[in-house]
Amino acid sequence: MRHMLKIGQQAPNFETTTESGERFRLSDLRGKKVALVWYVKDNTSGCQAQVCSLRDNYDWLRAQDVEVFAIAPGSQKTHRSFKEKNNLQFPLLMDEKNKIAEKYGVWGEKQMYGKKYIGTIRTSFLIDEEGIVASIIGGPEGVERVKTKNHTEQIARVWGLKL
Image (cartoon, rainbow, N blue to C red; front, side, top):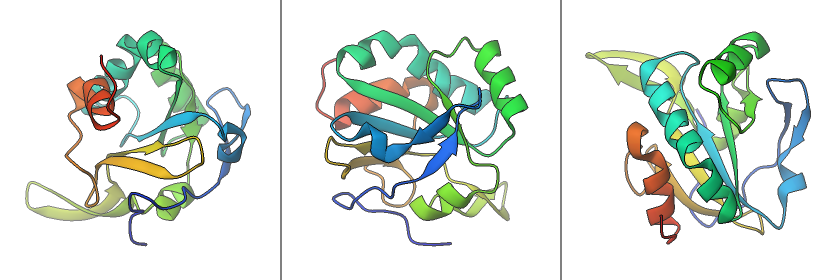
């Protein structure tokens, strides 16, 4: 695993597709604030809580000029199903082979119930208008652990926004 990005570093550009097959390129979002939210897996309870926190506050996030994108391993089919099931308004980005997660340093060793394994480390990168990582929630470089049910509140607090 590569080391995770640090606050103040340039966010690596990447190109992928959304759950609906649309092309996505991070560099196209220059001039905008971006919340790039890694979740672990489609259709799991923790990930559902995480994306639903964003869904429930999506209008507020957009009013703050924050573009929201969630990204995880999985297929277009599982992403589409997860999006529809949870009525998500924001795109789910494809990272089937974890290449983008590796670029960001969020693909690595984890531990659950004393068992070690390799997987996605739940992390959110808050990227400023110049493409710089302004803050990180989760992972070893994060200012705090991701709280799935209150994730929007975390984003607001670390970015100094009033929810």
